[in-house]
Image (cartoon, rainbow, N blue to C red; front, side):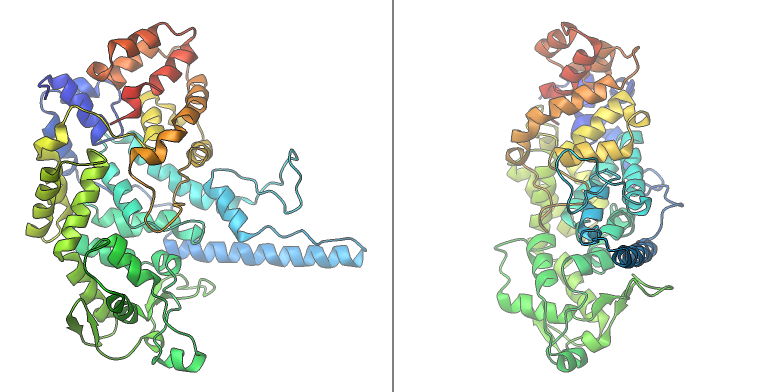
Length: 489
């Protein structure tokens, strides 16, 4: 393991953050580990300035009103066309198309009958504003961070407890601010309860209308249980697969979670807020993982979540995922064991677990085998070049989606993958993005100066030679962003 302090500093900024900026490598070279640890102690670490952003419930009500007004206008237009003998068959723009376009960073949605090559109609601004304002706050926090470790933790936990804007569009960004950021350096139990009880999660995993067979609503409406949320909590969020739970545990836990719902978004004052609906809740005691839980309403579910958070299998599962995310696709077993022990000994204190990650020798291996996913690579480019002031957030979101990682739109409840195999095939497509970003930078930008500030001692002689021999400034900057040392952490 190299002891070069500048190498260690550059390694720290790429592995634990989003890469260096300015003269940060030299600034922290005296003690890189202490600099990363200090990021955990910043006042308000993990929080963002979001005074002008709506809460998830406010956003959901605004989006409900927007859709209602749009449908009313479409009906009026349809009546007018029919009265004039016209055809209004393909007037409507679906909600799914609205969400997809806005999250992808565009302000336009193709009409149902639009032909290839035609200019799409402009989308009304509210949906795009909701998601892009949230995205800008997220990227600004990553790009503007000093070290960036806490922001990386936010992104990790947001993906661990993921939802999809394809299904719960209006709440996607606010969910991260409300359920993840307040607990990123706190208690895993608190984050677990906040995430699973958030209306966005309850809707995403179909729990909002899940009802026990013997509940008042279940009897009256002849509807039943939905096990999606219970299963994903056990399999993805806490214990992990092959950890010993049974189908009976899933069913019992799903019964525990009946009644966890939210007020309809069409209600003007409190629509979109969490509610425990007793009429949906399955009455009686439930047994989960061999433990009996009396029927005490919403506290029954919180009791199960608290026990799952403290379960040894949860400690192993979280330790494995953290080590894989930050260090290697196949992390050292000793590192996983150390994180597991800290998680268990501290009762899931996430700041202590983060400290254990930074202080472990295995975390500082000079071999940089982790391929940055598109989002982290984009944030690193914006950070290095200060290009967030010249590239609109909508464009950043568009490129992120084009590279296969649309913001807050994972393909499944297990989130985006965290291994090289998932992203390797798309690396070639990053060159087009790098060329576009490079072309937007000021003419005075010196590629070799950025190479020194962005990679420093990590840059190989071959990379330095390649950047130095480029035919143009734009090409040199693009080659820097596509250098193996910049693509990996």
